[in-house]
Amino acid sequence: MSEKKEDKTQKQLLHMVIGGELSDLEEIEFSNLDEVDIVGVYPNYASAYDVWKTKAQQSVDNAHMRYFVVHLHRLMDPEHDEE
Image (cartoon, rainbow, N blue to C red; front, side, top):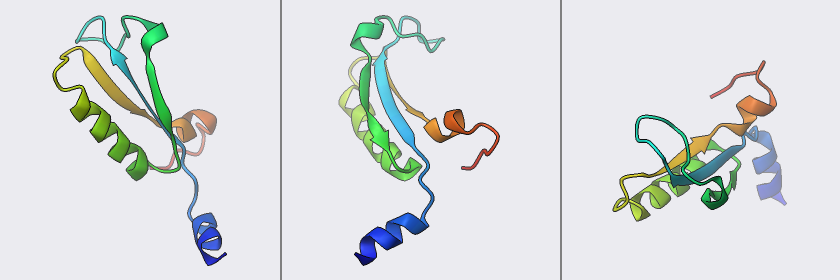
């Protein structure tokens, strides 16, 4: 029970990790939206960063493959921009 209370004291700042092959390395445009890898949604940046780093390292052999951390909390509440 104390773990749940402790988790509730920290504000949830949702982040999503996505990736896929880019059509052009100069732009953030996926070559095939049907193949975009939606890895998951995480409660904070640190958790998302750890997953992003793992996925990015797994795809290091493909120069066109990129993974990104999307700050969902900023999209959901753009007037209250927290890091």
